[in-house]
Image 1: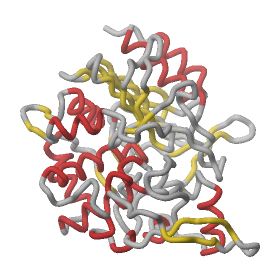
Image 2: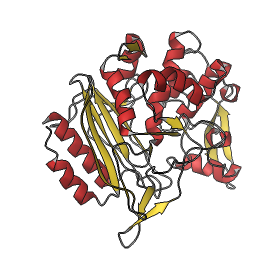
Image 3: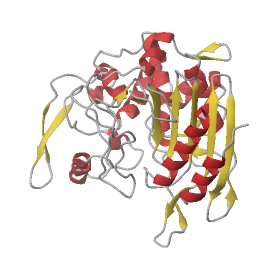
Image 4: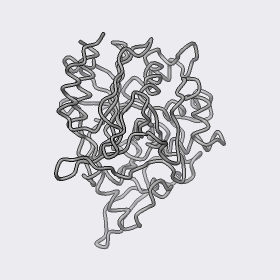
Length: 377
C-alpha cells in the first residue's frame, strides 16, 4: 500500500478545492484517491470518478487519432496540410503592427504540415499566451469562444522555425474530420475511447451533474466558482474540449506504457509510439509559455533548467528529476491545473487533476510533485 502522507500534506497546504490523484503502471492503477470538494460553494464531494474538463490534456488523445490516420495513409506528416485544410493553405506571417493595430504580414516561406501542428512549430499561437495574437484579435475583432474564427490567425513565425504553444491541435482535429467525414467525437469514440475503455471521455455540450466546477481564489482567500466551460462550441476542440475522469485517462497512460496496445487491442503501431516518445523538434526548446492574460494562465516553464523538447504530442524532459520522473518522460497539462506524466523507462505514470484558474498554480504543482514522489518511493 502506498503511503500518501506527503500528498495529504501537499493538498492541505495547497488551498485547492479538491482533486484526484492517480498512479498507474502498465498493468493497472496502483493508487487512486479523491480529495476535497468538486464544488466549494455547494460543498459537493470530490470522487475518484468525478468528471473534469481536461482541457489541453485533450491534445495527446487527438494526436493518437491523427497518427492512426497517418498509419492508414489518410493523413501525411510532411505534406502541406493545406491540401486537407484549405484555411491553412496560404499562411501569412506577422511582421509588425500599424499604429491602429492592424498587423502587417508576408507569405510564409514554407507550408504548414501536420508535423508542424503536432509539434507546435506551426507558428499558430493562443490568444491568452502571446501578446501578438491578442493584438491581432483586438484589431480583427474578438472571436466567439469555440468558434473557428478563434483558431484562425496569422502566424508568428515561419513553420518549423520556432516553438510556441497554440491552437495547432484544434486544426489537427479538423484535419481528422476532413479526411474521415466524421465528427472528432465520433472518430475518437470509435477508434480511441471505445477500444481503450474510456467510458466517461467525451466532447459535451454542457457539464453533467456532479462534474467538478472551475474555481478561483477571491481576494479574501475564499474560493468562488467561475462559469468556464470549453465545450459546446462550433466544433469539437481538439486542443482542449474533452471532459474525462482520472480513471479514463489512466487507460490512455497504460496504453502508452504498453507500447501502443491495451488488453490485447493495438491502438498505435510501435513506430507511432516511438514518434510520440522521442523529441521531434531538434535543437528548438519547448514548454516555456508567456502570458497575455495572467488571470487565465500564469507564465509557465515546468523545467526551466532543462532544454525540454516536444514529441508528437508531449513535452519531454531530457534529464531525470531527482526522486521524480526519469529522463525522456512524457507530460503535459490542462489549463484548469490538471497535470500528468508518463515514464516509459520506469513503466509508471500518473496524474493530479483539479479545477482552478489561473493555470500554473503552485499548490496544484506541489500536489503533482507529491504524487510523483509517491510513485518512485
